[in-house]
Amino acid sequence: MRILVLDANQRSALAVTRSLGLLASCSIITADETPTALAGASKYSSEYRQYPSPSLQPQAFCEWLKAITATEQIDWVFPVTEISSQLILLNDRILNAARLPFAHLAQVMSLADKWRLIQLAQDLGITHPRSDYYVSAQALDRDIMAGLSFPVVVKPTQSRRWLGDRWLSSTVHVAHSFDELDNLLQHKEYLRDFPFMLQEFIPGHGAGVFALYNHGKPVVFFAHQRLREKPPRGGVSVLSRSAPLDSALVETATHLLDAVQWHGVAMIEFKITPEGAPYLMEVNTRFWGSLQLAIDAGVDFPSLLLHACTGASVLAPANYRINRRLRWLLGDVDSLYLFLRDSGFSLRQKTRRLIEFFAPHPFSTRHEINRIDDLGPAWHELKSYFANLKR
Image (cartoon, rainbow, N blue to C red; front, side, top):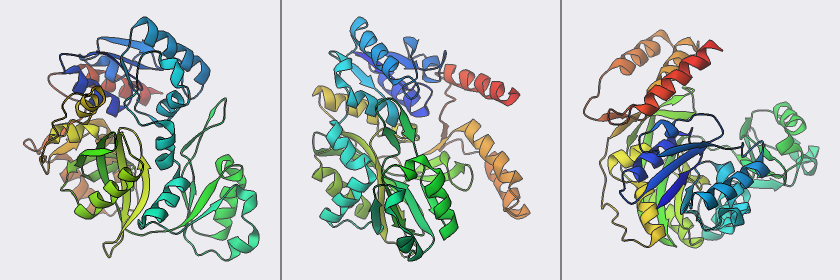
């Protein structure tokens, strides 16, 4: 099979490339909008191609994809970002004979659209934050705003919104006052002119369940815990560990994905209150950043997904290795730097962080990018890292 892996600068794309590249039946072509890319440097990538930006040149990207899937006789296309995957789902005829390992657009949007997800959760009796929908900022009058309790979460219904000729990216905000909310509504296009929700603020910590479904049937679940992030106060994971599954979260995730007859991968995110109550927050309908951790722990999501899509036997593991750790080294370096310069952390906290950074864990930790048997991505990332420092 000839497989095209898009968004090759993403760490999840590298994990997909390494996973599928190990299969004797697969030949991997990687691609992204830059002249070189992380996954393109892998020995498992037989070729690397540059394409027009899906976000800045969506029409040109679609034309490029239509051409390469025909000329290279591509069987499967694996996008790993929301923009590229949804753009293809919106224009599925550009794939020629190639296929996507995803659910249909209507199924994807039933989970990716945050208001539709809330409505589905209400129908299924799944606990979620109290949410009010507004078609735009103009629909939220001063009387409603005056009656709000702060802090309040201001959440656009879509993280990436296709406007017909361009993508509009949005961000979730937490407003702590009337003035802060009013400023957001006036100056953020995705709130001023498009649908959003005001949600109650749920204190606690985040938790997630990662799932693979095969045409409406659950195949396997996985869970991890973030140990360090960039930025340190909340961001992408730079150090994580595989964790035991929480049966209550798996039950909720199963109830939700069964209801939409899901197919493919999904990450279901929860907020756990200090009292231990889980609240459904959102669902990501694509591969996630710490995908390599699941593979290292024994749940090879890309390979299992490909087998499910091709009708092959899917031998999901009965369990996986707990406390397996994954470290994104250069991301961890950045996180350490940001932690040490943050005046909000005490000297004792910074000293402890330094000790933890240098403490070896040779038997439980693997590096996400740096792999002895595939050094190309590490060299590529290191060169890019120092090039960015010089700018």
